[in-house]
Image (tube, rainbow, N blue to C red; front, side, top):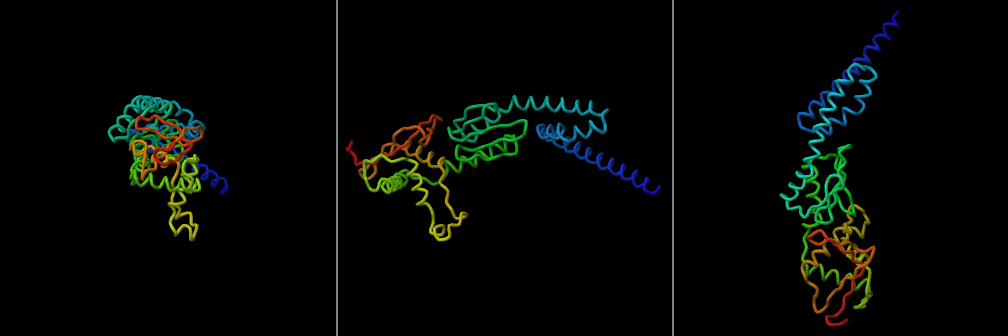
Length: 270
């Protein structure tokens, strides 16, 4: 008899835990709706909660269906306004030019790419070098990550004369001192990256002391150099040659060209 009582108590405890779990999920949905976070609310309502209710409280599924319909209607309205709000926020923050939409993805300043997954409530912000995951589709969270990328790419200390000088020095190493020789831009970028390392890295080879110089930052630096119109330094001029598989360089309008080789020669020499 005592064993039977224990079994009954166990069943009741299990039911209480189940009810408590459902109550907690419904409270979360309610809280998210109050914050207008309908996408997160929808993720909970269509997840484990639905299967628990369907299995144990089938008469209550129609109520959950009613909640889902109203949530999805709000999500539909959110999606309709999403593009306009995100583009306006980017424009207000000076993150232009911006093109695209939430369905196909956005491109900002030609190089920063944004993808939106409403169903999963996630987005990505990054470039061809690196993509950062954002566990949200809220405009403020996406804009925050875009600003981080924009700062990394475009707000580094940069002086046209200094960059051209460093470019020339790296070119001479790659070309073994031969002016007029066409060399791959990627080899020059690698040399610039090696030169940027501090003595502390070379002594320890500790990856935490490694200075990064990814291709997207090099691309932006080349774009700035082209925009500066500076082409000659100490009677030495450079020339970029286009080619497939090169470094993609974007201009201020978002257009791009792929440069594969670089040449330095004395001014006037062909």
